[in-house]
Image (cartoon, rainbow, N blue to C red; front, top):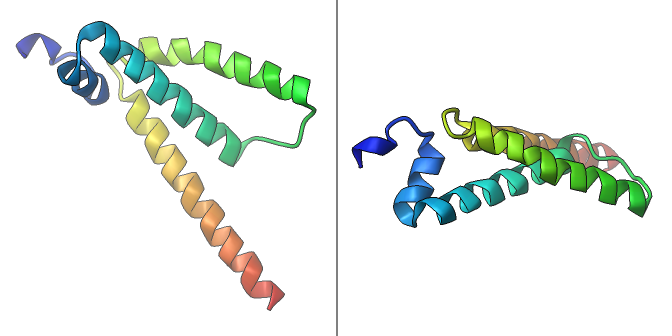
Length: 102
């Protein structure tokens, strides 16, 4: 599909896998999931339930901006790299803390 060359790799993948409408929704769902993972691993603190609901609602709504950027920019790929780095950091920190306790 020659007309998809301007899109980001992940959006192009989802559109080629399904149709355009479903591909965009899959892209949005992927952005939301990765954003929640990055927020949870990197920034989340213990908060009351109502504040968590407000934060996650704003996060889900704010992901529409990421969706607009993801048409031409590799937003999903960047979020995946950020999530991978944070996961590696958390695992290594957990191993280090557990090693000090012994």
